[in-house]
Image (cartoon, rainbow, N blue to C red; front, side, top):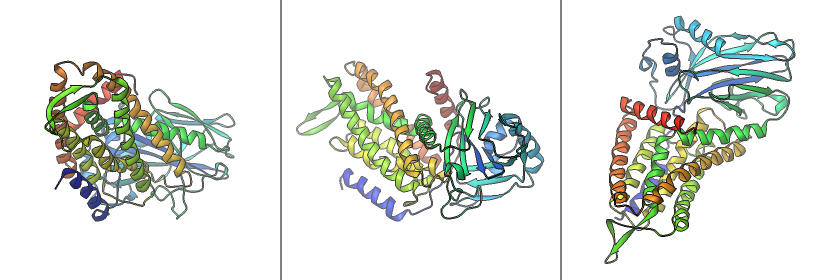
Length: 435
């Protein structure tokens, strides 16, 4: 059977025989939710337990609170073993989140019963609050947000409207964060980072444009921190500036010829990335809307396999112009990986079309930036004797990394090498000024 047929069968098999609930992975994000009523404002500050454990030096073992089921989510009261540490967590949030208004001054956060949300990717502490000193709901809230930025500079903090009738946001999508009904809703309106720690939240006007821009930023951020997505693009980029020599009608394995035209090579990789875009846009939409469900363990493992297969094609051609087929087929699974960012917080609402479009725009913007940085360098190196070696040994390195991830993700083992690679990559991205 040809490799083309095998790839198509893999895609069909995954969609038909793996109808497992899709869960989320951790994207270095915290969340502050606002639920605005006629005379009060309440909400939740949500932080990953691992991040809190490191930031506050609690000395706890996150594995002790690891979820014991495979799908869905579990929202419950804070375990008794964590209760002694909660005052420290509460003090941290109170110190790092300041909310005020020009009408009434500071609105202190009055904390209520804490909770812990368990999903496949980990545990998230919910510090539930109600804003004090609020005779009536002000028109605008001034938010100063500094959660995790000093300990993890690539963190982002998302302002999410859970309920605000005046802004057209009615209740929330079912996430366990607040009471849930079939037609619930939520909307991201702003994203904090280490360089943007102040925001004025308008409680009266509609923030659709702000929400759209926030989703663009989320998509761009996700592609930059998604090392696996970037390495898949790199595997596709490596052979874009060369062509294989034909030997008696067959493609040579390692005999490369440099292309002459920058324009032709650039438009060729643009075609490959467009196929990747079409594919991941399809499954991103279907997964985020709940039409298809696939375990993140399976999705992330297949994404790692996609890197290995694309890299192996660079060493030993699987089929003529196999990059196109690989980009499209595995782009379907990358789309489900992207969808976990949206699905994690239940952003399935009347703004979903705008959210999906904005997220896709952000992802494509990030991909284009990556191509604009890497492609000209590869084009300049294409005629050197070093370039064929770069393709071969670069692809070998990608295969090794990919199978490391396959092993780690498929068997749900957290190996330290992955954290070291991730931290090093973040430092590189920070040095380049991308974050």
